Amino acid sequence: MHKATEANLYHRYHIPTEDVPDIVPWPPRFKVQVRKHRLALLLLKELLHYRGNLKVVLSRPCIYGVFSGPVGGFAPREQYCVGCLRCTTQYPDVVQILPHPERAKLGDSYFTPHYVTTVAYEATTGRVPVRGAGYRGRFGGEGWDGMWTDMSEIVRPTRDGIHGREFISTMVDIGERPDHLVFDDRGEPVTPPRVFGIPLPLVFDQLPGMDRNPALARVLARTARELDTLALFPLEALAHVEPDGRHLVPVVPREAARGLRLGFQPRMVELAGWDPDAYRALREAFPQAIVALRLPFGDQDTLDAAFATGVRVFHLTADYHGRLPDGRFVMEGIREAHLFFVEKGLRDAVTLLGSGGIIAAEHVPKAIILGLDAVALDTPVLVALQARFPGEFRTPQDPYTLPDPLPVDWGMKRLRNLAASWRDQLLEVLGAMGLRDVRRLRGEIGRSMFQKDLEREAFGEIEGYLEQAAVGSVQPAVGSAQPAVRSAQSAVSSQQ
Ligand code: SF4
Image (tube, rainbow, N blue to C red; front, top):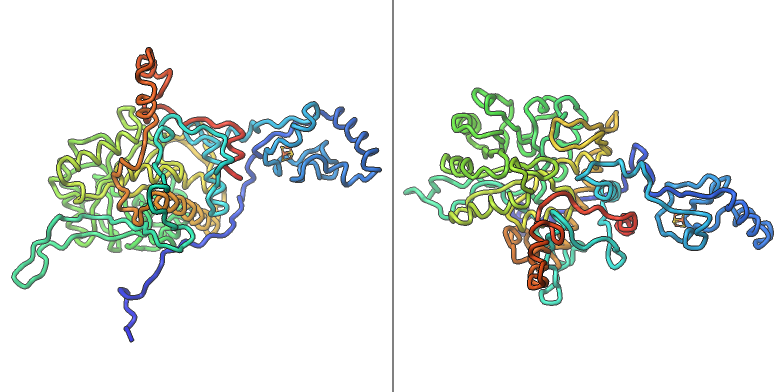
C-alpha cells in the first residue's frame, strides 16, 4: 500500500459556500408606485369578486408578497419586488414599477448599480447569477463589453467543470519559469526556478484603509488562507494579523526596502515602484522569496529594465476605473504588456498580475485571454463587503465606507462566496471552450472576438460607416469610456 505523502494524496480544490445575507440593508431594486385612490377602487371591486376574502384581496396581484403586508398595496413591501411587471401589466393605471432612485446611488459611474447588484448576489449566495435565455440586456458595448469570449461548444468538446464530472484546473503559477535548467557536476540545478502555484487566478490586492481597519485586514488575511491564495498587504496593516508567509504578500515602498525586517519569511514580496537598489535589498533580505514589482500599466521601459535586473513577476496596475496613466483602458495595457514579453520570446519566463477595472467575473477570463496570468481584486472586495462610495471611487485616496463594525467571520464568508462564484464562472468559460487548464487560456486571443472588428467586417463597406466609427457615433473603440448602463429589466434578469 502506498504511504500517504503530499504528492500522492489527491485533493480536489473546492470552495465551500453558504448563504451570507447582507448586514446593512441595501435599497430595494424597484420602486413600487401605487395610486392609492385607484387601488382603493380596485380593492372594492375585488372585495365583491372574492366575496369578502380580505387575505386574498390585500395580497393581489403580486405572488411575491409585495402587497401582502398588513395594509396590502397601501404600503407595498418593495424589498420583495423582483420586477416581473405582472402587476403593472394587469393594472397599469394602479401600479407602476420603476428603478429605485436610492439603488441608482450604489457604486459609482464605473462600478454601476448593475455590477454592485451582481457582486452582492455572488457574495451573498456563492452562486452564479444566471442570465440565460431570459437576458434582455445589451450584448455589446464599451470596454469589457466590447470583447466576447468564443464559447462555441458545438465545435469543441464541452467539459463540465462546475459539476465536477470532469476536472478543470484553475491553478496558476506565480514566479519565474526559465526555458531551460543548468545543472552542476552533482546533477543539482544551479539556479532552481523560484515558482509556486495558487489554486485560482485570483489574489487580493491591498486596499486603502487596511492599515487603519484591523477587521478589514483580518478578513483579507483569513480569506487568503482559506482559499490558499495571496493577500497583498501594506506594511502597516501587517501588525493587525498573524504572520503568515504563505498567504501574505507585503507591499514595500521603495524607501522602506533597505533594512526591512518582517519577523516572518514570505513566499512573495512586492516592491512598489522601480528602484534597482531597493529590489536588490529585498532579494538579499528575503532570499527564499519571489520579489515582484508593482508598477502602472504602460511603462515598457521599466518592464525592460526590471527584467534585465532579474524581476520575473510584475503586478501591473490601472486605477479603479481601469484607466492607465495615459487615459487608455486597462484592456490595452494588458495586451501591450503581454505582447511586449511575447515579442522578446520571454513570455513564459515572467508572471503578469493585473489589477484595476476588473469588477465582474467575466472580466477575469477576458483579462487572462488578453495576457494576464492572474488578477488582483480590489473594488469588488469592497463591494462584496457592502462598501458605499460617496462619490467617484477611482483612486486609493477617494473615500468609501464599510459596515462598522465589520464582522470578520461574515466578511471572510462573503469573499469566499465571491471567489467561489467567480471561479465557477471561469470554469463555465473554460468548459465551453473545451479547455481543461486555465493556464492554456493565457494570451489565447483567438478565443475571443471584438465587437469593433466584427462590426467593421460586417458594415465596413457601407458608405459612411468607417467615418462614423472613427468619431465613435457608431462603434466605440475597445476599452473606451465606461461600461454599458443596463436597464432595470436586465438587472432583473441577472438575478433570475
Ligand atoms: S413587479 Fe412583480 S414582483 Fe414587483 S410588485 Fe409587481 S407583481 Fe410583484
